[in-house]
Image 1 (tube, rainbow, N blue to C red):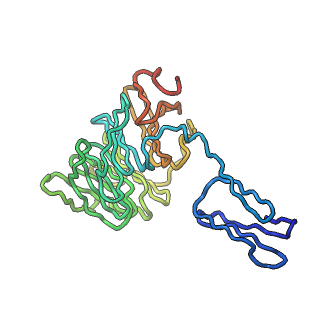
Image 2 (image 1 turned 30 degrees about the vertical axis):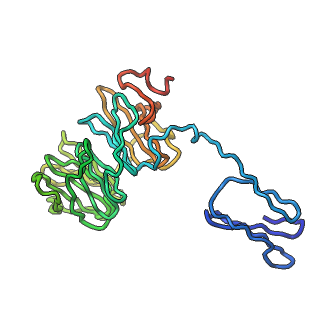
Length: 308
């Protein structure tokens, strides 16, 4: 910014650790340098050779927001067997879905920076390929699965009886057989009969046990549908863009998890975000409540927050 009075230029950058520099154009030197060590909301006021800082009160909608947890969430999972919602962040928490109340928390039910992933025996993964299987009821570590590469694991699925399927940046489909409960370290089986066909990182995977189908999708937009019994390709190709049914802004930060839940004949959406919240919605985008705070009964729409 140029100030005609005094031929001064004020410069700064958008870094979180920067400084404000005042330059004298006539003398071509720095008149004053003010170090800024952390971002804040303030108003700079100058008079003569004095610069004052007035801190502005920060108040926004986020101050009245109910947070699911004090840390950024990495994922949420619905466990249909126990009818519980699991949240993953710096600890593992759980709460009933039918009547949601503040979650029971199990601090340090994992190692390093691992995130909760999936179903009855929850799994946790790390960006170096580590996968661990946990008992959701008591937090005990049941198995450690062999990493296939030092790469991020993006999805772990329950695959048939006593088996897990893991995919990720390794571009491989890895099976783990946990039939022998005496072996806590499970070796990866990479002999997928249909072959390792993905040429880019696998970012998503899901299965439909009723139809015996498994779908995997990679960074290059390639989607492969596999038969889970024969492990052979059923269909392969880019995804045809589906028609949009509903769209709404659900969070103030990155959405890290979305899951469709079915209850009786109704469908609901559960999602989590880096804004520290996990919310439940009707299938057409009506807000039901924050997991871990408001209480609702799925069979009674009058208890949903959007009706309050």
